[in-house]
Length: 224
Image 1 (spheres, one colour):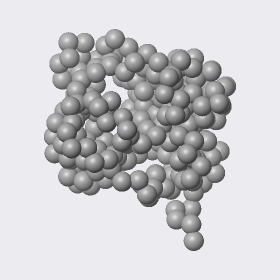
Image 2 (cartoon, one colour):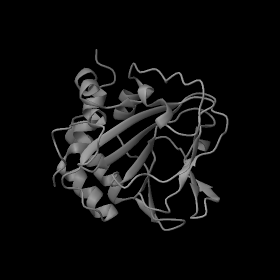
Image 3 (cartoon, helix red, strand yellow):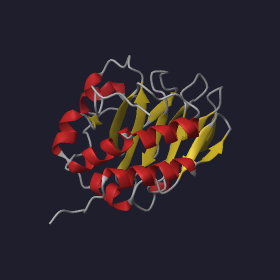
């Protein structure tokens, strides 16, 4: 018997678009949106059930680029092999989701490409304050953290002078979105991770994106 029983992409897309339209917008220290109940529970369980082990990274330097060969993307190969990957990718590729992103965030999305990274941080992981590159048309993190301390594993937020000003909650199935810019400093301060810090990074990226092997559908641009 299949476990979990996964919904259809249209159902996931409708659930996701509703969460986007109900997002709470905040302006400090830069514009960002907070979401709850982002994905149906069965879709979350499907992702957590994937046979993908956390990467064994011995030394962290505060960047993900230092271990690019160990990162996990929902690319064409994983979409073909794993139904939960295909479900999420097909759902977020749909025009109604693209339209909800455009309306919520005030951005143009036509012609971009879907990029999904599955992140599993273990103790010792951290990220230095940084701003995402403009080739990411938006940056979204969906938290799939579990455990007694999981809510403390959210993204750290900094002001334009890189001073720490707050931290998002990593409540299960919640999310944060922002539009990359010169002042969108964020990271993950070093702190204990008793378990696995699981999250999804979602982007629509520019057609100029060079690492085509990271994309869900490198030959299918987003269209409203």
